[in-house]
Length: 249
Ligand SMILES: [Zn+2]
Image (cartoon, rainbow, N blue to C red; front, side, top):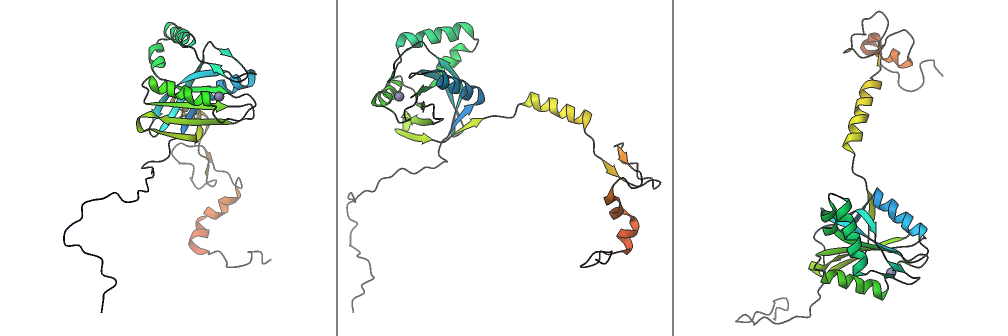
């Protein structure tokens, strides 16, 4: 009787051949997100709110672990129309010059300009052909990545992360406001806590319960109903009755 379950076993290994491939991309980390500083978020909202045409801007963008952080945004000189923004070499050069001359970290900022945002005013936030070809221009500038945002007055902000090195773009990437804890603010609040807030302690008059570590003590009779729960007599001799209240109701 033939064994149908027995796999075919050729005497010699076959030469490898190309099977019907089913290539796919799988993530080995979480999907990268766009993080936006509160300042950049606010500036972009004002740009979109004020502009009645397709205004554009650039911004700093750096990697923050697996994510991409947009910290600052800058308007550049541009000629706008209802359908497109012209990013000219002159406009960019002028912005770079201004940054370098006005800020100590100007050069650093210019080197980290890897974000381009623009308003579609009242139109949808899908990219135009020109928006896509603009991203090819950034790739030609040998950037390893670049982030694009298209925003509109309807409150929509759509990001695409271009990972040029791996030839992948993340379309409609998740975005969130980035607000790290401010350590100076924290220290000030901690000092204020120390000065204004202390732990209340409940004891009873006359039992010497006001010896708690110098904390403020509320030690008078009847100040707090829960006081009764802590009477030594309750703890040692009485158990709470099951069901019903003590007064019998
Ligand atoms: Zn556009």
